[in-house]
Image (cartoon, rainbow, N blue to C red; front, side):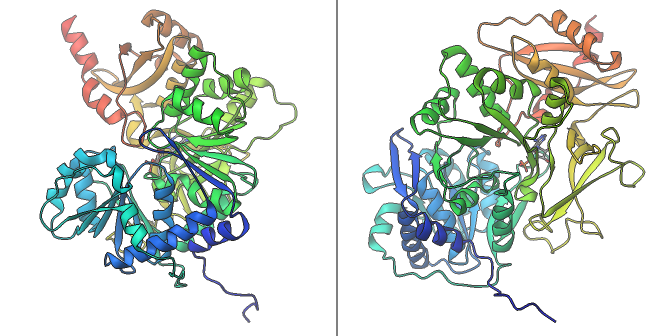
Length: 548
Ligand code: AMP
């Protein structure tokens, strides 16, 4: 017997419709490319998204078509999110920090017919566009007529102005209702090995993720919250925030391209931001700015961190120096992205060191997701906080197959997706990532966690950023190498750094060398590019021995 409850499909357009109807006056604030602030409301965003759906139809976009965006976080990108998916097409967010070669590969692979781009990407557009002839019909610049810039495009690709198209359209469009499993969004993984692969989200997965991600133990946003969207909308739907915050009726503050510490702090204070989410690199930059400038965060209460491991020193510094709670989350493009979240809690009898250790882990699974760790024997590892292995995940918003591949092809026979992360789960279900499987260092047959060694480095005075990579060693196969960037005005003494390690870790974990660099390379999603560092320093120890 079936239940007798209403059976309404989960539709993304219902999120913006809800916000317009019940939180219509709530603001969306965007810092535009020229640095100025733009203010709108959910009621206006919904009306303009309907107008935009009309524009898309006029441009020949049909349900199922892929429509690309190459844009910073702003109200126009938000309108695109809702208009494209709401009319049944697929919002394909492209990461502008990728190389022109990767961008053209991705646009060709997805066969996007129309591309919406910010005016700051002219060079990228001009390099990529000649490789897109055949399917790309139009590039629409996210600008008013006065803000239009010239872009040289091949014959057959039109250059159009967003606000001109919007002015010509009307709001008569009505959000259609269709199968909730329909594809709604497409995001390619950063592809550190091989070509990027497309993760194809559905209305169902996106709405379920938005509802779960806003649980009290996770983002827990509500009307009155002022959420700053530091995570870019071109990477995993900005962790779902353009859906969660809108559904919750929280104010959205979009920083655009200005993500340096001073710009982030300035906007946070000017717009009375209460909560924000981003990768450690951005929060390390914010912390460095606060420390050097003496500026305080007037209203920020919570910073959510994910995308790379959060150093315990960052949690401690924001808490002690600024009264801001750092909450650590884990996820990936393939998991929409939220998988685990480290919810603040009080544990009786726990001392400060144990509390910091607990908060530094990646957190417990949110409902709708399941995780397990599988050891080298192929069996599930016990939840003892020690036994590590491959982290696997399954749930309502986990990728089943990459774009173009058959459903289920990315999962094993039991439906598990192997993440490529190495992790351990403790008795309370708190998961800890020790490495990406390809970043693990194996010295004399023993595993060494690069994340743990990096966390020690950034807890030392004078070190702004650190990476640990494996270097080839004639006797031990691989040995850890520590690469560091100094804080402004600090000088790093490698011997003193190594002396610290000798105090804190087993002898064989102490890095074989400390190398001070001016900067570390970052990937298109703001993570330290260990691949680049491995390639550059792989033979460092062999060369050093030869030179000696
Ligand atoms: P992406 O698909 O580009 O978002 O990358 C996902 C990967 O980022 C994960 O598989 C992890 O390797 C890494 N990652 C994400 N969040 C964390 C975290 N909190 N701690 C450590 N690694 C993380």
